[in-house]
Length: 285
Image (cartoon, rainbow, N blue to C red; front, side, top):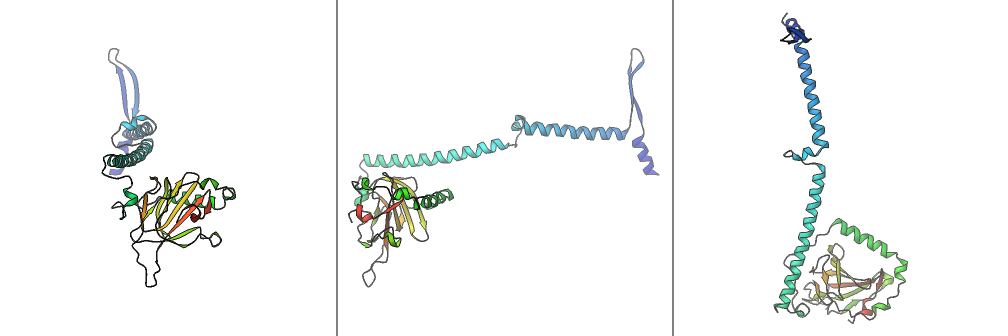
C-alpha cells in the first residue's frame, strides 16, 4: 500500500501557470510531475558535464585548470629536458676545456707533461656506460665497412707521410696477419706504461667488451681509424678530441712469469676506409 502511494506521488501531475497580473489572464500553463523534474535535472547534468569535458579537452581552456597537463605540454616538457641535459653536458665540457687551457697558460701544467709522466694520469671516476644507440651505430658501421669492396681497393699512399706516434714502448709479440683474421699487432705490456693516441682525432668508442676488455677507438683524418684493445683503464670518453701522443688509457701492472713471457698485451688495429692495415708499416716500433 505504501509503495503504491509513493509511486502515485511521483507520478502525480501539478499544473504550473504563468499569469499576467495586470490582465488577470493566464499566459502560459503546463503540467509537471516530480518524476519529470528529476529526469530533467539528471539529463541536464549529463549534458552540462559533456559540454565541459569537450571544452577542457579540445580548447586551450584546459591548460588554465590547476593540475591538468595536455599531451602537447608533456611532449614539450620532455624535449626541453633533453635540450637542458645536452646544454649542461656541453657547458661541463667547455668548463673542463677552459680550465685545462688556463692551467697550461698559467704554467701549472706543462704541455708535454702527459707524454713524459712516468705514472698514468687518469680521473678518479671514469664512466664506461654506453647507450643502445652507440652500440647499434658501431655494429652497423662494422658490418657495412666489412664488406665494402670499394673501400678496400682504396689507395693508402696518402697515409705514408703521416707522423704517427708509438702507442706504447713494448715490443711486438704477434704481428699483423690478415689471412688468419688477426687485423692488428699485439704489443707486450710494460709495467706502469700508458697508452698514447697515434694521431690527432676524435674518440668514437670507449667501452668495456667481454672479449677484448677496455677498448677505445679514435677517428682520424684521412678516413683512418685506430683501435686499442685490452687496455687496463680508459682515460677518454666518446666525443673527446685527442692529440697525437696524448694519453688515452693505461696498461695493467703485469710482471713476467717464470719463463719471462708477459701474459698481457695491447692489441692495436689500424683501419683505412674499412680496410685493415699493418700498423708496423706506418709506425716505427
